[in-house]
Length: 463
Image (cartoon, rainbow, N blue to C red):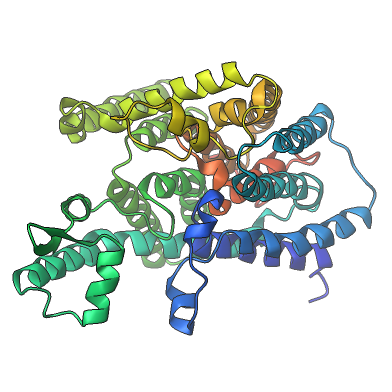
């Protein structure tokens, strides 16, 4: 225990906290009012927790982390502008908040944004400096594994069973449910009354029929984002750290990592996630230590095969009009209109839904968020907020890419691949509002651009 230092114990505890976020804080913070406080041990174990609890837990971690950083010589990164951009962005969020059209939504969002910046700086100044990646990962990867298992179970067992139970309940006039359960299901719109008859909500039934898994997160695309973020590293660890184990054990570990990740990813049915995943796989293959011809041939096969499967798997979605993609273009157009109307401060962090409700046509689908984290910054906090955030992320990823592209450490390049893929997916999603996703991603981003080059294993080499 002589080598177990305070920073290492802090990193282990912080990794467990991020794992807790994956397990319990997988909802957007603007939905805090819709997440009930658990009232029993069973609810504490099985139900999500209110997102604002995550901020309350993160605060003492941040304070203690600052003390650990201050206890040693303060090292500034070579690219010091990477310190000022996130601070400028966060500062502008508070200025924009003074003009917010909804104080409740903005307050919840500010807590979330503070967490993003805090996690980024903890990764940059503490975890990278002390090379603590391996101490963070146990909690994160344990929760990630649980989330994947949950998703596979949802797809294979839970959703089909629930659907059959509801159909059976409708057939028997709901006599197979206690009266209080039926009343609760009516309140939750699982049961609706049509022509005087209580029937299963057809919208819910259709969702169950599709069987899109979401694990412990808010919805399937959020799970796809988590897989994009953490699966590359999980695969690298499964392959790279099991070399000295017995062949059967090694094969089992690798097969389990491949099966859980791929099965859960397929179960999300995420179109954007699939395209980003193809890109991430190609990027990872390009820097492997293989002969050039073999490498490019493999990448070509992956791209052709991946796009072919994409076309076959989602052809019915596109033939039906690609409704979700079309809806996103409506949100993005509204975001541009809101930015044009409020170019300096926007309408306040997290408030897209308020002006959008006034702009959208009666037939358009309602949305609470822009489904694009970058556009969200522009319409919520104006052009200064959008530019500072976009510049921060693009420049940070550029620095990390230059730093690790030629690195012999395959594990940290896998971290970079996952982080890059997650930010790419955020062009069509709202991951920055979800503690489970954003705080994990920003911690890893800070680790990547720290002054020291992080290494999971100093002996690790390119495959």
